[in-house]
Image 1: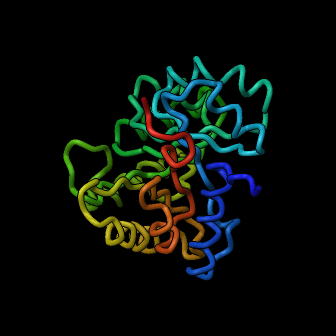
Image 2: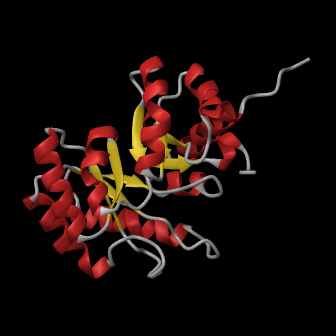
Length: 224
């Protein structure tokens, strides 16, 4: 009898399929397993299967959970995908390998100081409020150039742009908008990343330029 594929294998297959349709290479897309609120025993199977990129929402949770896991798998890369308080910038700089939620001038200044102090210059995605939703993080589109200037002044390595589209609207136009913003404001060689797409819509995001997809439920199941 044929064995069922693991959720990780199924998601990787879906990424491969989306890349084929978009005429892209699967290696262009980083799968971030969103492990926020998941216990270490739920994360361990993915690590054993060779997955190494994980996303956490909160600095404190990651500090509590990841030291032991990283001791066993030191090549693991941690991504901060939740909103970051400025007073946690130094802790985030010490712990994470990538920050996806740079969204305001005060945080850019705090991260610049934290990077100077820790000696780590962590790549950051600038989060853009593509859906004009006050309750979500993200800088307004009109404020993006000024925030990018501040990031450069603070010597923050900008890896690209990130967005979370509104939940109740077709996400494709928002993905296309982030892709256009990355082309308009990023380097001429097109090297900026696009952090966009979650469990419900990551294939669409990949077809519209995503380089980093943040997938939780499809890998770990619904939260209890």
